[in-house]
Image (tube, rainbow, N blue to C red):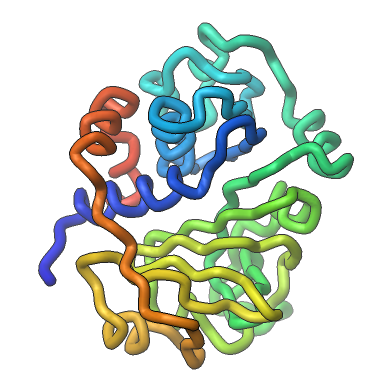
Length: 243
């Protein structure tokens, strides 16, 4: 099925928002526009008591519209209920108080390892990546880590990562094609987005797919799309597709 970048962005954001529960403490970092919008969407629709945490420290910002191109701008402090600095987010997570952390990476393997360090040899890499930063702390310590990646191909989802930057409580990985879940010691196919297919996911995944049943990720509802337009009037969710 033909799809546009806008349809993919809407699907990924809605899929992430549906994973969040009322009352959870949820963190997003820098360059995290889609998780930021997903958190705002969940809070508006079904999780009014969700606690939004971010790098600038603004707890439950009044709006994400002014988040700037980094998703970590000072405008996230405007109208916030309080300030919770990043070092306190790490402390909260290590004490078992952070329910969900949205984190990224570049390469993922079937065992749930995350690579954000190098492609190729560590000493002579083909590409040197930004490194673990907060993910090296938060993935092992947050109760649930939700990974998102706007690319789904065989270079991204591999049998074994080139370098293990971090491993730990990876729960779900949301991609443009599907949702993976880490269960029974490996990544398993949880659902396939309504516009994709098992064949497409298999062709673009570098490890054997395992699943209990073929489930479809439901498309965004009219209610979700209306709420998206309200919480994200500047279309921040599209930012990662503009690179």
